[in-house]
Image 1 (cartoon, helix red, strand yellow):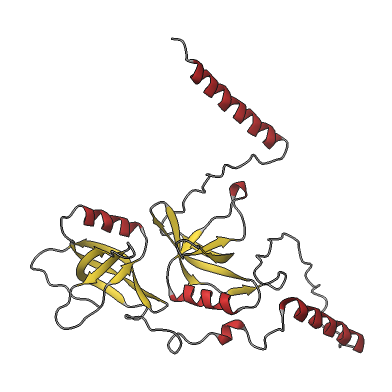
Image 2 (cartoon, rainbow, N blue to C red):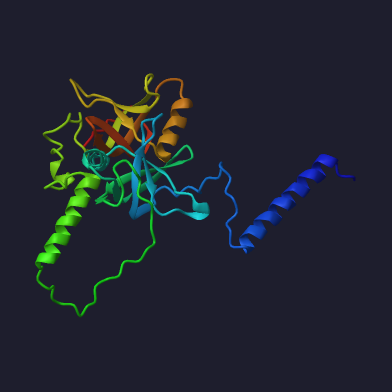
Length: 294
């Protein structure tokens, strides 16, 4: 059977592309990475431990994005959408208060939702950088810094000439980044209890076998868990955070004619006066079974 001319042309184009990539690799030049190339997703439940990077806000979705400083294959920096949490709230306030660019050493759990990796920051100490102007992201560097010798046990006293050098350095530093604050930026952050709105449900509250319904928010498009009330005023509805379990909840909602009744367990996380729910398990509710919450 004869191959068609378009098929032969496509095969030749693929061979030419492969040959060009091999030539670039042999020459020590990495092949060009397509703009549509994406790094493989990290598995849900993976842990990111002490990864340094910066955070930026997406102008369209108003989401906070964490980008590790160290790039991966193809020179691409991985991106994580940060989930709302008290740690993220502290990160955002610290970044807004600091006069210099801030990086964070983030530790947290990875989640997946509709083909994107999300990160729940659980620990994020700040790294304040003074080697760049405010508003600029410092470039990563691999320059080695010589460590002092172990034999140098004593520091010589500071002389008059050394005092002049220190004053000159401080003057140039103030001209470059402004006057150095007398307190750390983290010391100026108001306590969460006193400053800012309080969340309807305290962060860290656990729902264990809580019966309720899931519903779509018509304004934001997000999915919410609406707890069933045994009587009087109870817990308000909570937005469900993105994860693989939320995808399963969405499928259950689409397969039902009405809002399905479920039994759900999870943890409440607070962020800027709002409460969110990170689910850990759920099942369909059965009639006649009364379940409580904790």
